[in-house]
Image (cartoon, rainbow, N blue to C red; front, side, top):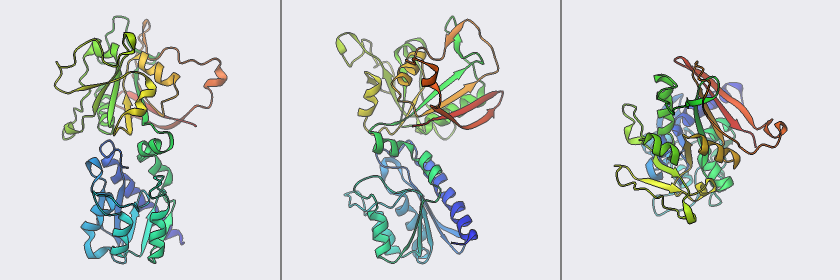
Length: 339
Protein backbone atom coordinates (compact mmCIF):
# COMPACT_ATOMS: atom_id res chain seq x y z
CA UNK A 1 0.00 0.00 0.00
CA UNK A 2 1.35 3.41 -0.98
CA UNK A 3 1.98 6.12 1.59
CA UNK A 4 -0.71 8.34 0.03
CA UNK A 5 -3.35 5.59 0.23
CA UNK A 6 -2.38 4.85 3.84
CA UNK A 7 -2.67 8.57 4.69
CA UNK A 8 -6.08 8.78 3.03
CA UNK A 9 -7.24 5.67 4.87
CA UNK A 10 -6.14 7.16 8.20
CA UNK A 11 -7.89 10.46 7.45
CA UNK A 12 -11.19 8.96 6.40
CA UNK A 13 -11.16 6.46 9.24
CA UNK A 14 -10.75 9.36 11.67
CA UNK A 15 -13.94 10.80 10.18
CA UNK A 16 -15.78 7.50 10.66
CA UNK A 17 -14.63 7.28 14.28
CA UNK A 18 -15.70 10.88 14.91
CA UNK A 19 -19.17 9.97 13.61
CA UNK A 20 -19.28 6.98 15.96
CA UNK A 21 -18.98 9.36 18.92
CA UNK A 22 -22.40 10.79 18.01
CA UNK A 23 -24.01 7.53 19.07
CA UNK A 24 -22.03 7.05 22.26
CA UNK A 25 -24.30 6.61 25.26
CA UNK A 26 -27.40 5.89 23.11
CA UNK A 27 -26.87 2.56 21.35
CA UNK A 28 -26.27 -0.02 24.12
CA UNK A 29 -26.18 -2.97 23.98
CA UNK A 30 -25.17 -2.38 20.36
CA UNK A 31 -21.79 -0.75 19.60
CA UNK A 32 -21.66 2.89 18.55
CA UNK A 33 -20.17 2.52 15.08
CA UNK A 34 -19.34 5.16 12.48
CA UNK A 35 -19.15 4.71 8.71
CA UNK A 36 -18.06 6.86 5.75
CA UNK A 37 -18.40 5.95 2.05
CA UNK A 38 -15.80 7.69 -0.13
CA UNK A 39 -15.65 7.73 -3.94
CA UNK A 40 -13.12 9.69 -5.99
CA UNK A 41 -11.98 11.57 -2.89
CA UNK A 42 -15.49 12.72 -1.97
CA UNK A 43 -17.85 11.56 0.77
CA UNK A 44 -20.99 10.10 -0.80
CA UNK A 45 -22.47 8.54 2.32
CA UNK A 46 -22.03 8.66 6.07
CA UNK A 47 -23.76 7.15 9.07
CA UNK A 48 -23.54 6.25 12.73
CA UNK A 49 -25.47 3.77 14.84
CA UNK A 50 -28.81 5.27 15.76
CA UNK A 51 -30.47 5.30 19.23
CA UNK A 52 -31.30 1.82 20.58
CA UNK A 53 -29.00 0.32 17.97
CA UNK A 54 -30.82 0.65 14.64
CA UNK A 55 -30.22 1.47 11.87
CA UNK A 56 -26.59 0.42 11.93
CA UNK A 57 -23.95 2.84 10.70
CA UNK A 58 -23.28 0.93 7.47
CA UNK A 59 -27.00 0.75 6.58
CA UNK A 60 -27.36 4.49 7.11
CA UNK A 61 -24.25 5.34 5.04
CA UNK A 62 -25.06 2.95 2.18
CA UNK A 63 -28.62 4.23 1.96
CA UNK A 64 -27.28 7.76 1.61
CA UNK A 65 -24.66 6.73 -0.97
CA UNK A 66 -27.04 4.76 -3.14
CA UNK A 67 -25.52 3.62 -6.45
CA UNK A 68 -22.39 5.67 -5.74
CA UNK A 69 -21.30 3.00 -3.24
CA UNK A 70 -20.39 0.65 -6.11
CA UNK A 71 -16.62 0.79 -6.55
CA UNK A 72 -16.20 3.11 -3.56
CA UNK A 73 -14.22 2.64 -0.35
CA UNK A 74 -16.19 2.12 2.85
CA UNK A 75 -14.57 3.13 6.14
CA UNK A 76 -16.15 1.60 9.22
CA UNK A 77 -14.94 1.65 12.83
CA UNK A 78 -15.98 -1.96 13.54
CA UNK A 79 -16.20 -5.13 11.47
CA UNK A 80 -19.59 -5.25 9.72
CA UNK A 81 -22.00 -7.57 11.52
CA UNK A 82 -22.64 -10.97 9.95
CA UNK A 83 -25.62 -12.24 11.97
CA UNK A 84 -29.27 -12.08 11.04
CA UNK A 85 -31.63 -10.01 13.18
CA UNK A 86 -35.36 -9.40 13.36
CA UNK A 87 -34.50 -5.68 13.39
CA UNK A 88 -32.57 -5.55 10.14
CA UNK A 89 -30.22 -7.29 7.68
CA UNK A 90 -26.58 -8.09 8.38
CA UNK A 91 -24.31 -5.21 7.38
CA UNK A 92 -21.89 -7.61 5.68
CA UNK A 93 -24.71 -8.65 3.34
CA UNK A 94 -25.63 -5.02 2.67
CA UNK A 95 -22.03 -4.33 1.70
CA UNK A 96 -21.84 -7.36 -0.57
CA UNK A 97 -24.99 -6.15 -2.35
CA UNK A 98 -23.61 -2.60 -2.66
CA UNK A 99 -20.31 -3.88 -4.21
CA UNK A 100 -17.73 -1.37 -2.95
CA UNK A 101 -14.16 -1.95 -4.08
CA UNK A 102 -12.70 -1.81 -0.57
CA UNK A 103 -13.83 -1.96 3.05
CA UNK A 104 -11.42 -0.46 5.60
CA UNK A 105 -12.14 -1.35 9.23
CA UNK A 106 -10.56 -0.36 12.53
CA UNK A 107 -11.48 -3.34 14.72
CA UNK A 108 -12.64 -6.93 14.57
CA UNK A 109 -16.01 -7.44 16.28
CA UNK A 110 -15.68 -9.49 19.48
CA UNK A 111 -19.32 -10.57 19.30
CA UNK A 112 -19.14 -14.34 18.65
CA UNK A 113 -21.97 -14.04 16.14
CA UNK A 114 -19.60 -12.04 13.89
CA UNK A 115 -15.95 -12.30 15.11
CA UNK A 116 -14.31 -12.45 11.66
CA UNK A 117 -17.32 -13.79 9.74
CA UNK A 118 -18.14 -10.32 8.44
CA UNK A 119 -14.68 -9.91 6.95
CA UNK A 120 -14.79 -13.43 5.53
CA UNK A 121 -18.08 -12.73 3.76
CA UNK A 122 -16.61 -9.63 2.13
CA UNK A 123 -13.47 -11.52 1.03
CA UNK A 124 -15.64 -14.24 -0.53
CA UNK A 125 -17.49 -11.57 -2.52
CA UNK A 126 -14.21 -10.26 -3.95
CA UNK A 127 -14.17 -7.06 -1.86
CA UNK A 128 -10.74 -5.97 -0.62
CA UNK A 129 -10.64 -5.77 3.18
CA UNK A 130 -8.10 -3.68 5.10
CA UNK A 131 -8.05 -4.15 8.88
CA UNK A 132 -6.44 -2.28 11.76
CA UNK A 133 -6.64 1.34 10.62
CA UNK A 134 -7.29 3.74 13.52
CA UNK A 135 -7.41 0.95 16.07
CA UNK A 136 -6.55 2.93 19.21
CA UNK A 137 -9.01 5.73 18.51
CA UNK A 138 -11.77 3.24 17.68
CA UNK A 139 -11.16 1.39 20.94
CA UNK A 140 -11.57 4.61 22.90
CA UNK A 141 -14.73 5.56 21.01
CA UNK A 142 -16.35 2.15 21.57
CA UNK A 143 -14.85 1.49 24.99
CA UNK A 144 -18.22 0.64 26.51
CA UNK A 145 -19.12 -2.07 24.01
CA UNK A 146 -15.64 -3.55 24.12
CA UNK A 147 -15.56 -3.58 27.94
CA UNK A 148 -18.93 -5.30 28.06
CA UNK A 149 -17.67 -7.94 25.64
CA UNK A 150 -14.34 -8.46 27.43
CA UNK A 151 -15.28 -8.10 31.12
CA UNK A 152 -19.06 -8.24 31.25
CA UNK A 153 -19.52 -4.75 32.72
CA UNK A 154 -19.73 -1.12 31.60
CA UNK A 155 -16.74 1.06 30.89
CA UNK A 156 -16.50 3.33 33.94
CA UNK A 157 -15.42 6.98 33.97
CA UNK A 158 -14.89 8.65 37.35
CA UNK A 159 -15.20 12.43 37.39
CA UNK A 160 -13.57 14.47 40.15
CA UNK A 161 -13.62 18.27 40.39
CA UNK A 162 -11.12 19.38 43.01
CA UNK A 163 -9.04 22.25 44.31
CA UNK A 164 -5.27 22.12 43.88
CA UNK A 165 -5.02 20.42 47.26
CA UNK A 166 -7.50 17.69 46.35
CA UNK A 167 -10.62 19.02 48.09
CA UNK A 168 -14.10 18.70 46.62
CA UNK A 169 -15.85 20.97 49.14
CA UNK A 170 -15.35 23.21 52.12
CA UNK A 171 -15.58 21.63 55.57
CA UNK A 172 -19.15 22.96 55.69
CA UNK A 173 -20.01 20.94 52.59
CA UNK A 174 -20.22 23.92 50.23
CA UNK A 175 -19.04 22.84 46.77
CA UNK A 176 -20.77 25.11 44.22
CA UNK A 177 -18.75 25.98 42.33
CA UNK A 178 -15.17 24.79 42.61
CA UNK A 179 -14.62 24.81 38.86
CA UNK A 180 -15.59 27.46 36.34
CA UNK A 181 -18.28 27.47 33.62
CA UNK A 182 -16.04 25.98 30.90
CA UNK A 183 -15.15 22.95 33.03
CA UNK A 184 -18.78 22.49 34.05
CA UNK A 185 -19.86 22.61 30.39
CA UNK A 186 -17.33 19.91 29.57
CA UNK A 187 -18.75 17.83 32.42
CA UNK A 188 -22.21 18.15 30.89
CA UNK A 189 -20.81 16.98 27.55
CA UNK A 190 -19.45 13.91 29.32
CA UNK A 191 -22.92 13.29 30.75
CA UNK A 192 -24.34 13.42 27.22
CA UNK A 193 -21.92 10.65 26.20
CA UNK A 194 -22.92 8.26 29.01
CA UNK A 195 -25.73 5.73 29.22
CA UNK A 196 -26.08 6.31 32.96
CA UNK A 197 -24.65 8.41 35.77
CA UNK A 198 -24.13 7.26 39.35
CA UNK A 199 -23.79 9.09 42.67
CA UNK A 200 -23.81 8.06 46.31
CA UNK A 201 -26.51 8.52 48.88
CA UNK A 202 -24.60 11.30 50.63
CA UNK A 203 -24.51 13.36 47.43
CA UNK A 204 -28.18 12.63 46.81
CA UNK A 205 -29.27 13.80 50.24
CA UNK A 206 -26.95 16.83 50.41
CA UNK A 207 -27.41 18.20 46.89
CA UNK A 208 -30.57 16.58 45.39
CA UNK A 209 -28.68 16.51 42.07
CA UNK A 210 -30.56 16.68 38.78
CA UNK A 211 -27.77 14.93 36.84
CA UNK A 212 -29.24 16.15 33.57
CA UNK A 213 -27.54 17.64 30.52
CA UNK A 214 -27.88 21.42 30.42
CA UNK A 215 -26.22 22.16 27.09
CA UNK A 216 -28.34 23.78 24.35
CA UNK A 217 -29.50 21.14 21.89
CA UNK A 218 -28.36 18.19 24.01
CA UNK A 219 -30.97 18.27 26.76
CA UNK A 220 -32.56 15.04 25.52
CA UNK A 221 -29.23 13.26 26.03
CA UNK A 222 -29.63 13.28 29.83
CA UNK A 223 -28.52 9.81 31.06
CA UNK A 224 -30.28 7.43 33.41
CA UNK A 225 -29.76 8.30 37.09
CA UNK A 226 -28.33 5.70 39.45
CA UNK A 227 -27.89 5.79 43.22
CA UNK A 228 -25.33 3.63 45.02
CA UNK A 229 -26.83 2.85 48.41
CA UNK A 230 -27.08 -0.03 50.87
CA UNK A 231 -29.75 -0.44 53.53
CA UNK A 232 -30.15 -2.58 56.63
CA UNK A 233 -30.83 -6.22 55.91
CA UNK A 234 -29.41 -5.98 52.41
CA UNK A 235 -32.58 -4.50 50.94
CA UNK A 236 -32.10 -3.09 47.46
CA UNK A 237 -34.71 -0.36 47.96
CA UNK A 238 -33.58 2.75 49.83
CA UNK A 239 -35.45 3.98 52.89
CA UNK A 240 -36.56 7.22 51.22
CA UNK A 241 -38.97 8.09 48.42
CA UNK A 242 -37.86 8.87 44.88
CA UNK A 243 -41.34 9.81 43.68
CA UNK A 244 -40.72 13.51 44.36
CA UNK A 245 -38.46 13.65 41.28
CA UNK A 246 -39.74 13.95 37.75
CA UNK A 247 -37.08 11.59 36.41
CA UNK A 248 -36.74 8.14 37.94
CA UNK A 249 -33.78 6.95 39.94
CA UNK A 250 -32.48 3.38 39.92
CA UNK A 251 -30.71 1.75 42.86
CA UNK A 252 -27.36 -0.04 42.73
CA UNK A 253 -26.59 -1.95 45.95
CA UNK A 254 -22.83 -2.40 45.51
CA UNK A 255 -20.11 -1.46 43.01
CA UNK A 256 -19.93 -4.94 41.38
CA UNK A 257 -23.67 -4.71 40.66
CA UNK A 258 -22.96 -2.29 37.83
CA UNK A 259 -22.37 -5.41 35.74
CA UNK A 260 -26.10 -6.24 35.99
CA UNK A 261 -27.29 -2.93 34.56
CA UNK A 262 -29.19 -3.49 31.32
CA UNK A 263 -28.26 -1.34 28.31
CA UNK A 264 -25.50 0.51 30.18
CA UNK A 265 -22.13 0.32 28.45
CA UNK A 266 -20.77 3.76 29.38
CA UNK A 267 -21.15 4.64 33.08
CA UNK A 268 -20.18 8.04 34.51
CA UNK A 269 -19.60 8.37 38.27
CA UNK A 270 -19.83 11.84 39.77
CA UNK A 271 -19.45 11.53 43.51
CA UNK A 272 -19.07 11.78 46.30
CA UNK A 273 -15.90 10.65 48.02
CA UNK A 274 -17.42 7.41 49.32
CA UNK A 275 -18.53 6.27 45.88
CA UNK A 276 -15.20 7.27 44.34
CA UNK A 277 -13.29 5.32 46.99
CA UNK A 278 -15.48 2.22 46.68
CA UNK A 279 -15.21 1.90 42.89
CA UNK A 280 -11.47 2.60 42.95
CA UNK A 281 -10.97 0.01 45.69
CA UNK A 282 -12.90 -2.50 43.58
CA UNK A 283 -10.70 -1.61 40.56
CA UNK A 284 -13.75 -0.78 38.45
CA UNK A 285 -12.58 2.60 37.12
CA UNK A 286 -11.23 2.65 33.57
CA UNK A 287 -10.95 6.38 32.99
CA UNK A 288 -10.37 9.34 35.31
CA UNK A 289 -11.50 12.90 34.59
CA UNK A 290 -9.66 15.24 36.97
CA UNK A 291 -10.82 18.86 36.81
CA UNK A 292 -8.47 21.01 38.92
CA UNK A 293 -9.38 24.55 39.90
CA UNK A 294 -6.57 27.02 40.72
CA UNK A 295 -7.68 27.43 44.33
CA UNK A 296 -6.59 26.13 47.72
CA UNK A 297 -9.22 25.11 50.26
CA UNK A 298 -7.22 23.61 53.12
CA UNK A 299 -9.48 22.04 55.75
CA UNK A 300 -12.16 20.69 53.44
CA UNK A 301 -13.59 17.42 52.17
CA UNK A 302 -11.22 15.13 50.31
CA UNK A 303 -12.09 13.88 46.83
CA UNK A 304 -11.42 10.25 47.74
CA UNK A 305 -10.74 8.27 50.89
CA UNK A 306 -9.08 4.92 51.51
CA UNK A 307 -8.89 2.79 48.36
CA UNK A 308 -7.18 -0.20 49.95
CA UNK A 309 -3.58 0.27 48.83
CA UNK A 310 -1.10 -1.58 51.02
CA UNK A 311 2.03 0.08 49.59
CA UNK A 312 3.14 2.73 47.12
CA UNK A 313 4.34 -0.05 44.83
CA UNK A 314 0.70 -1.06 44.38
CA UNK A 315 -0.12 2.45 43.13
CA UNK A 316 2.64 2.71 40.51
CA UNK A 317 1.92 1.89 36.89
CA UNK A 318 -1.87 1.90 37.19
CA UNK A 319 -2.68 5.13 35.38
CA UNK A 320 -1.41 6.78 32.21
CA UNK A 321 -2.12 10.33 31.09
CA UNK A 322 -4.22 10.20 27.91
CA UNK A 323 -5.07 13.87 27.46
CA UNK A 324 -4.75 17.25 29.16
CA UNK A 325 -6.22 20.64 28.35
CA UNK A 326 -7.10 24.02 29.81
CA UNK A 327 -10.78 24.83 30.28
CA UNK A 328 -11.09 28.49 31.17
CA UNK A 329 -9.14 28.91 34.40
CA UNK A 330 -9.23 25.16 35.16
CA UNK A 331 -7.06 22.22 34.13
CA UNK A 332 -8.49 18.92 32.90
CA UNK A 333 -6.37 15.77 32.99
CA UNK A 334 -7.67 12.47 31.61
CA UNK A 335 -6.07 9.23 32.77
CA UNK A 336 -6.66 5.68 31.55
CA UNK A 337 -6.30 2.54 33.63
CA UNK A 338 -3.43 0.33 32.47
CA UNK A 339 -4.47 -3.33 32.61
